Each structure stands twice: as C-alpha cells, then as structure tokens.
Length: 347
Image (cartoon, rainbow, N blue to C red; front, side, top):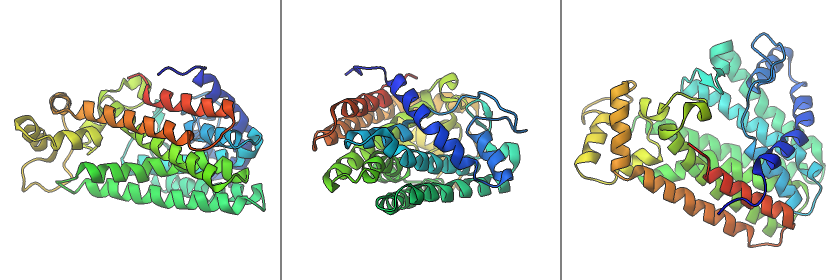
C-alpha cells in the first residue's frame, strides 16, 4: 500500500500550524527552563543563539490536528491538543535520555549532557505541567476532558517506562510482556494524540474511541519499527549510533521474540545478551564484534521478521479502526497515509 498524497507535506503543514502556539507556550516558562526547552526543540544552541537544528517528524501533533479535522472541526481546534501532546512527548524524551544515558539526539548533545541531569529533570517536569495548562486554557467545555485524556495517557506511558527499566534486571521477558510495555510506553500517548483533537472538537464518544484505537495500534506499529531501527537502522536516519539497542543489551521486540524461538542460536543469543545464569543484571555494553554477532543471531532466530509482521498487523488494525465511524474524507485519508508512512520508514 502506497500513500496517495505527500505525507511529508501533511507533516510540514501540521508543524507549521502548531509552531506559533508551541513557541508561545514555551515562552511562558522561567528563563532557565525556557533556554533548555528551546535547545531541546532544536530552536537554539546551548548558549541560546538561534539555530536551525533538525527535529522530529512531528507524528504526534500531526495526528492531533488530523483528529480534529477528521471530526469535522477546523484544524485550529486541534492545535492546543497538538501542542500539549508535543510537550508531553518531549518531556518523556528528555527524561528517557537521562535514563538511557544517551548523549546524542538528532546529532546534538542531549539536554542532560549539555546542561546537567538536574536541570534536565526540571525542564522535563515543566513541559509536562505546561501541557495541561495549555489544555485547560483552551476551552472551558472540552479542555478538562482533553487534560484528563492526556493525564491517563501520561500515566500509562510512565508505567510502560517503568516496565522497560524493570526488564533490564529480568532474565526472562515474554513476548506478551514486551508487547504490553510497548502498548503503554508508545501506544498510549499516540492514542491520546489521535483522540485529543476530536475531544476538543466535542466529537461523539464513538468517534473519539475509533481515533484512540487507531493511535494505539499505530503506536505499537511505530514502536516495532523503532525497535527494528534500533538494530538495523542507518545512524544518519535515526540520529543515534548504529545498533544502539544491541550495544545496551535492550530487550526490544526483535530480541525478545528471537530469544523465544528456541534452539542453539537462541541459546547463543541469550548467553551473549544476558550472560551466564548466575550473572547479575544489567550487564555492561556489548563490544562491536559482539554487537555484530548479536545482530546476526536476532535475524537468524526470526526476530526481525516477527517484529516486521507485528508492525504490519498493527498497521492493519489502525486502518480498520478508522473505518468504524464516519470521518471527514480528506483527513481520514491523511491519517491512513500517515500510518502507512510510519510502518514503511526506510532503514
């Protein structure tokens, strides 16, 4: 399936739509926090001078805008939801980089490595609070419901992150546990992003529910592809070192499914990723030769294929959710094309 229109143009349109409101929101932060947030967003360098640094694609704010449009509202109705979701997403990225000790994002030092752990934590916290302020000020009628939706999604996302951290010390993580973690860590916020524009538009529960389910399945597909990129992705595309997930012995979908395959190669992969049975987890990073061997073993055990199949299955489920209710035709098509785009990202 190939998108019928330029998804990049849709993403760019939605980024332009929210940029004034997003910058206005961040301008409200205390000066020290505002400097860190502007740096993280790619608007300035660490000293505060304007730059044009690359940022993310903006999938989450885009689906928030498209969700409002699909619910027969103007795009402006979805802007506060798009801004709020983008703020929470970036709060999570700042904190995730601390947790994972990642020193680079989009080819620049991460916030904690540029400003320190303490300032990074505070900046992330400030973005999360700001998100709810934006929603509660958006509309007295629908803002509280949108804020509640975002709070529930954020709680699920944090629970998923907690599970992801806990996995580091577990020798045995099942495919079901890994999928549930991904559904919470990634699917919950994308589900919220897809529904929040419709909530702000006062759409019926059935419409909100269909869009939420679309986003949740898209989130699982998105995470599956991210996990593939974490092993086989091109650093020039991902902005992170090659095979970074294997280097850190991360129990991502490809690895967990490969370990579940059984057989001599799965046993070798288990020993490589987890060490001997009496080893205390987490272990240190893998070396380059070990990463190469682990990458081969994950693919040989079917981990790459299994994850790609799961991504496609969740894509189909996301597209199916859009068919449950009557949506405005053009944003409906844009949402479908965006889902295909997410799953067909190039490595």
